[in-house]
Length: 93
Image (cartoon, rainbow, N blue to C red; front, top):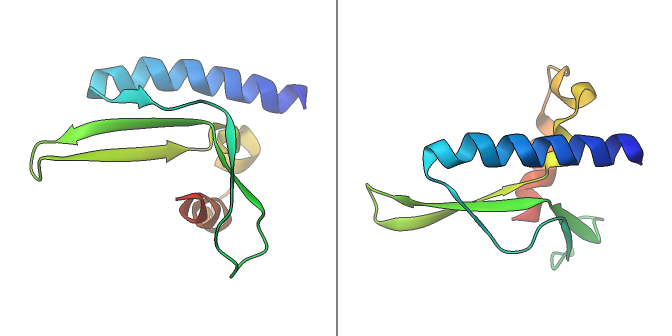
């Protein structure tokens, strides 16, 4: 678990530093597990490490971005196939 914790800490620091340049704002609580409300898959919870939002200048809508930062470790990023990670993130929305 310490490795996951270290990944989350580093990802948090980097995401705040990088995304402020895009004018994205952190919103809501951090490092939460949300209860799944969809019966079609076997997941009971979905992780949400951090949520950012920004104002889309073209549509005049607020866009929210949910991140599972612990999924961005070396073992995940070195993989050529992100299908499982993207599906999991998509289900969390």
